[in-house]
Image 1 (cartoon, rainbow, N blue to C red):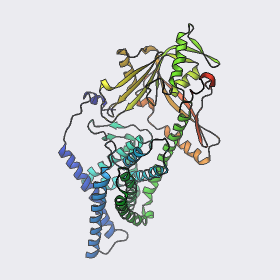
Image 2: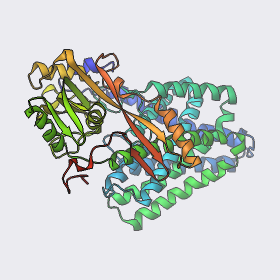
Image 3: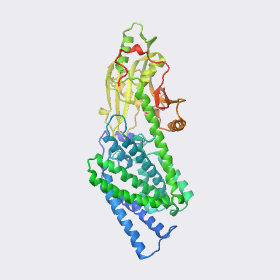
Image 4: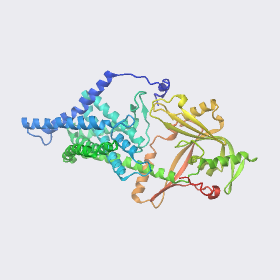
Length: 518
């Protein structure tokens, strides 16, 4: 990330700047450019649109009354006083509402039916919001006075994408943090180009802002209705009483649905555009979430062997004069190499499950490295992690070491540099000329039992994976010569997903009651 070098000089101390004037100008632009222009377009379409009202005093006062009470109740009360209370790690928005609900759910690994319904609602609402961002940016960009509002919408698309990635709804994309003071200030190149392409296509297709009115109205009113529905459950998770929050949310929902149903009459006049965009984005999110869930099921069902068993196995090799031992029906040897295995979860003790990458390496090569390093890299919700808090080094015995590293959101992980630092501090014993880094890569196999629709979803998921930000790029390994990929074959069929390795571990290698771990 371009700003990571500058962030390191702060040494964890983030300068505080008020920026009151800049904040005031931004807020003014959002209020008058974003919220303020919506009533203007509504008035224009009401009296000069395809089905204009008579321009008399009664109609003008009636429409102005609707505008006033809508702004007061929906913007002032619903969003400012209620919805903006939903703060999830400093972020707001429709994904933040789902994050709050998820934190309140029992952590038993099985999502409740209510959570599945709310998740679907959030995905539909988020998809509608993306359509809104594309459509409304065109309208706003047509007026120089509201450039700030369009920037607010673009930044909102970045923030929503980041939240969606964190919640597992979106593929990994390159995210560039642009501020060491505000975690949510970021730039996502892929989203920026998609917005540009969408805006250009809409300008060519609709030509005027009036033609976009139906598309914008359907997108924003649908999102408003979904937000009212979800906020009821968020308020319940805060302990708010049903007997008063229920009627309040029903009142908001009545207003939202009134506008939404009125806008459905313009479906064929352009209202279908946000629906089509929403369906595409919803399909993407649904497919990605389902695919990642299949991989998670496969990994969780894989035989969980405690790392202690491999420590004992390696110690037997080290104690052997020939550096060999029997592993079931085959002879296992030691190779004079140091290999770093990237792990998805931190390893803190010998009783933790052995990472899949190490197990697959032993199975396929019939050998175990002389030095084994199990490295987990995690990001925390602060811009910079000081060097003294960057890592934990845990010797596990038998030349196996676990490293749990932490980086701030302004810092880009650089695995080779981290390993060299640990070597210079003599925290790990590693020969730079004879060490490699193993990166796990899933290879998805389709079982014949998988049904036709799921087969299409799986092929779409495989296609999406080709465009994600790969692990070797993310960890600074793209130009590292000692990078190797560990292919993890995952077979997905009807009602099952499993990791498949041809050379299975011998069942009698472990005493009864020690495997698998649950």
